[in-house]
Image 1: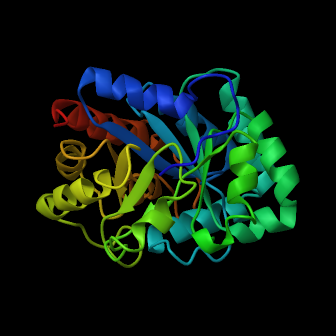
Image 2 (image 1 turned 180 degrees about the vertical axis):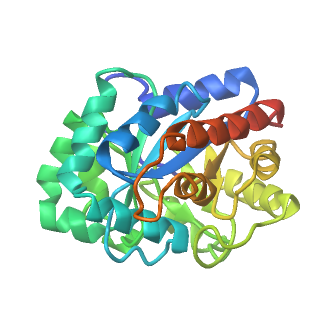
Length: 285
């Protein structure tokens, strides 16, 4: 059970990317970055460098003052971005700017409904599509509220990517997966991001259970922090999602006033490269 995007132009960037990963026989690497962290220009340097560092799909966080599902690192990143002047329209501008130099790497926007509601949902969907955004993860809109944004997003040609969790049982899963498209994001641990990690065996079991309900690719995140963990996940899932540890690496390159130091971008991209190399060595089953 999966929703299809309404673009009508053949496979989307997301579908093409996962098809390419399958053809290569490997899991992918999805990296989360908070838009505008630590400042717009430094952020854009990082964003521009992610595909070359081996990232298969980019997840851009839409900064929000109360990111309740996110751990302390991502919360801090969001607040730094807001302090540096990042807005939702600024986030869309970043995506559009990225698209002028890369028309292949999928971009997923992740965040909360409040800023989208303030922006105007229909205007947001139109502008996101025009900016070259491929899909949305809106963590605080449950399937019961699909008419609010999910269905209009699908009609606008954007993937709607849903979170499945360890508590999404076989009775609940069909509801979670209805109208989901692009891929399913499996949250491997309960609680907030970046705090602890799930075992490879538990993830393998969860991926197998999800695959019984959907033919969509399964990406696994929350608690994936090291190159070794990313490889372990990529060996059993269609992609590993890494966020908090990338943000930690960025934070290590900030001075006492949260300003970027000269080595920050290279440090972040070097760490991402190590994740990508590790993932590429873990052949997906």
